[in-house]
Amino acid sequence: MNNLHQLFVHQIKDLYSAENQLLKAFPEMIGAAQSDELRQALEMHREETLVHVDRLTEIAQEMKIDLAGAFCAGMEGLIKEAKSTIKEVGGMDVMDAAIIASAQRIEHYEIAGYGTVESMAKEMEHTEAADRLGKTLAEEKKADKKLSQLAEGGWFSSGLNEVAEKAHVA
Image (cartoon, rainbow, N blue to C red; front, side):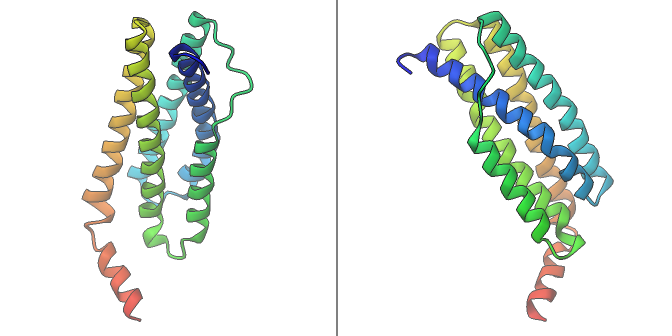
């Protein structure tokens, strides 16, 4: 990559791969969720992720970017870690907390990616692309905030720590 445009293209392809990998991972995370509220939040974000893929596809078509062959190793690692964590959880009382922790890592990765490419698009005066990327960035931040609300208003404040302390003492 010799210029900002080439880096931008690389980042768009990387995000496209990341979003598609995430779509494949959602069913397992949704299936493992214990609370209806978390399950619904994950299902809603899965639907948003479909829109994110569509937006990236639109950007690629308009800018004549070939999305084939891209692979996001970062998302692959985050998904592997999430699946491993879900399998390692012994008690169902901590399953949702484990899913939230993994999902937030994924959200933060996406927020970093979309924030970067939105800035690049603005710098290169790709206004329509920047607008689309900004919408997706806002949705990723909203998903992260929802996960935080579920954690802080639910699992992390509803005695989960007490359950963990009892298990640790025993």
